[in-house]
Amino acid sequence: MNVRRIALWTLFWLAAVNCRAPLVATGPLLPLIRRDLHLSATVGGTLTAIPLLVMALLSIPGGLVVDRFGPRTAMVAGQLAIAFAGGIRGLVPHPTVYLVAVALLGGAIGISQPALARLSNAMAPTPASVATSIYANGFVMGGLFASLLSATAFLQWVGPYSWRGVLGLWAILGLAVGLGWILMRPSSAARPAGAPRSPAGWWTALSLPGVLPIGLVFASQSAIFYGLVTWIPSYYVGLGWSVGAASWPNTVLSLASIPGALITPSLIQRWGNRTTAIFFGAVTLIGVLGFWLLPALGVLWAIFPGLGTAGGLTLGLAAAPDLAPPDRVGVVAGALLAIGYLGAVPGALVVGNLRDLTGSFAWGLAYLAAIGLIFVGAGRAIPDRGAGVASA
Image (cartoon, rainbow, N blue to C red; front, side, top):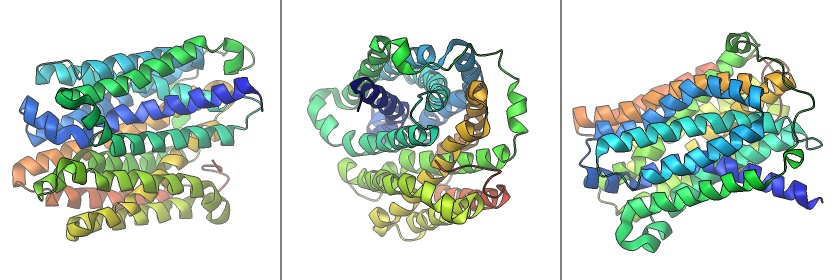
């Protein structure tokens, strides 16, 4: 196999890892961050909600930038910005400055993700379905690495630097990926043939069959995923687990995401888009109910939302390259990401608010269970196979 192509695939995968790991790392470290910065649960929830909101607001402009200037340029800018914003979180002394830093992190991710979607459709002769699978796996593995390493190995390595040092380690990843894209020659980044035309208005993306319900599936799984990975460690610390032990449900959730992403294309081929989305929504709902009603089995329950949210994520990621012409993939991806992340914002934020109001995470988990029902309902609204999402 061509060495240059292997290098491109590796950078592509690492960029996807870097779009999720610095954000997911907040959850395992949140008990320490809240302690040192004296944050309430409500403010703690904003550490995930703010970047998700900025990601939503910038996804469509980010898609337009990608279509106008090309995915490689956007990728370099986005990855270096992730490194900068993610790293300065560990340097700031005040909660307000930290919130500004996480907003910058969300903006950087909001630029990078449409570039990934555009590249998945541009890396000829690699089929778009293969490229989509590569970066879906990168997202899944980014969540796994952040959950598995942040509160265990990384925390031990950095010693007295605590959570600040861990965030610095994740920033190094972003810096390495950004530099890698700088060194990658434009021709090896598989530039789309021909100069892109002036991008169509983002509203035209919403008229494509299946975009709105797929966006709602994306939003539901994102709200549940970020709600859980942000607060489950704190939930179990409150039940008496150590910080390291409380990160294990998140780790298992991320491990279960791997087979969830891998089986999604086969399920779509066998069942169609609608049934596949309903299945993953139901599986996710089972896990959330388990966390709520029988928390002692948290490591077991984590398997279910791991499978289910990965399935919903893969459906959403596959949609843009399948539905849009090559020079419109960026803006369609941006529209889907905007819907998905805007709907995800209340996930961690509302759970934190309910924790402050009630003194318990029980109502927050009940809220996430209600979103699980929306996940199932959105799946029922997706057009059948051929009008919605193709196999990833």
